[in-house]
Image 1 (tube, rainbow, N blue to C red):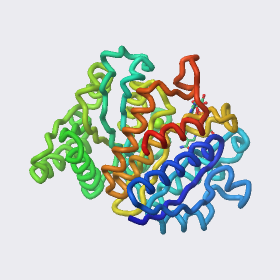
Image 2: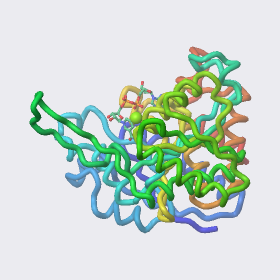
Image 3: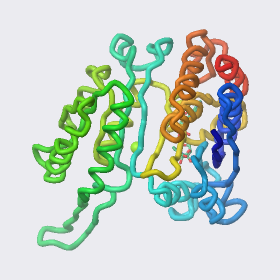
Length: 355
Ligand code: NAI
Ligand code: MG
């Protein structure tokens, strides 16, 4: 297989973790006989410094023409005083929009050797392995907003708007994902109160017969928030509206207790997906070789899986990460004061496990 991957190293620790991720992909290519072409482009602060804009035309063009996009992270104190639309983060939001990535996937995996890294009890988090699918380009964050003068002071509204097509495509993506995993889909809504949730539920019920191998469950969002910390092992795939997903995915991230391990994928309808660690540019540790590259490696596994349909290769990457951790290798963020590898050494260790 031959694929072109646009690499956007970005700012801070972004270049450090993406460098190791590219090396990892090269090792995947060697072991499984694939050729990955890497095209480097600028996004975020580094793009502002060189071109005056966080998302240059040529970066966008390269991304749209690629098979997948791998991003480090953007932003940092150097650009913090710029007005909103000129900031590094604006480049990332514009890129997500231009790629039409309406589904944000965040897998929540607890590696057994790190079960005690969570603030929850090890017996609650051990073996947790689920994915949150958050609708990313519609819902409450994108509906009409208004602030007006009323009889009793300001009147204000945010509107939760979805079309049937938007709901159906995110649900289908989640059904497909559940089918590839353990066959359980939990659709989270607020159908006891919101009309949009009732329609969401109706559409889910209409689609369900097309996925007889998937068991569909509905859960109200407030109960979902409780279940996530009470018994997170019950979940396989969770699908939900934009704001519900924003809140629940941050809550779920804390089940693992470690930001340096968590990947994400943003997918659309067929175009290139965007794969990135959930952490930021970590300016406090940038340039010191302290960054944990495993979140970016796990994002690479998602690219192989969802972007290229290379399930065995993705599993090999995940196994290499799991084995490295099981053997006791740690970067500083997860070493609990013990001996730690540098970013580059961790990269080399995982590549060796993969070989
Ligand atoms: P952050 O995620 O960059 O850092 C939070 C803490 O976690 C820091 O102490 C950092 O050292 C640590 N950390 C993060 N990733 C790590 C890794 N791979 N290995 C070891 N330790 C790691 O969040 P923060 O500090 O709020 O934001 C820093 C900058 O990043 C800001 O400019 C922010 O806007 C930007 N940001 C960018 C994102 C993106 O590009 N998608 C997402 C979140 C923040
Ligand atoms: Mg959030």
